[in-house]
Amino acid sequence: MTELLKRIRCKIDASCLVKGGLNKAGCKVAMTEMPATRLVIDFDKPGSPLATDETRCDYLLVVGGGQRECGWVSVIELKRGQLRAEQIVKQLQAGASFAANLVPSGEAIRFRPVAASGSAPKHERRKLRNKSNMIELHGKREHVRLMSCGAKLVTVLR
Image 1 (spheres, rainbow, N blue to C red):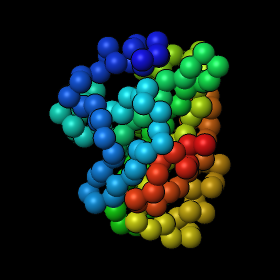
Image 2: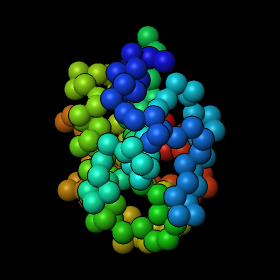
Image 3: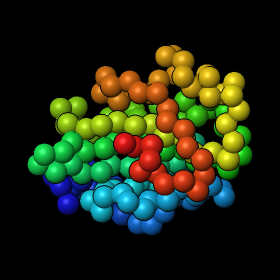
Image 4: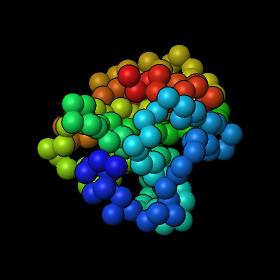
């Protein structure tokens, strides 16, 4: 486990960590081909650092980097049905704001906000490409990466 993951792990209750694939309300995301050195925090589980009445995304993924690689930080929202851009942006930004408290600002990371859904209408995808809907972590602003339920997460992180 890398130093970044160790620092984060000591701040998180083990009961909210996920070991396998990601699954919420019928939308699954495959974790195959993902590095083994990772933490996945489920914000809906008991022990989550976020209260149940707070706006939040489903998961926070932190992948530890090696000596020659930087790590990954990804906030993830899963929707079985149609994606609504406004709601997704609020949830992902809330997750990124929490991640900013866990991940030191000087840490070399790649940041990726991700939304997986059963369907994403064209007008909603267009909204997500708008600059005002970018998600920010430590001054890095990124567009939401879209994927279909059932796909491999690694494909949108690269």
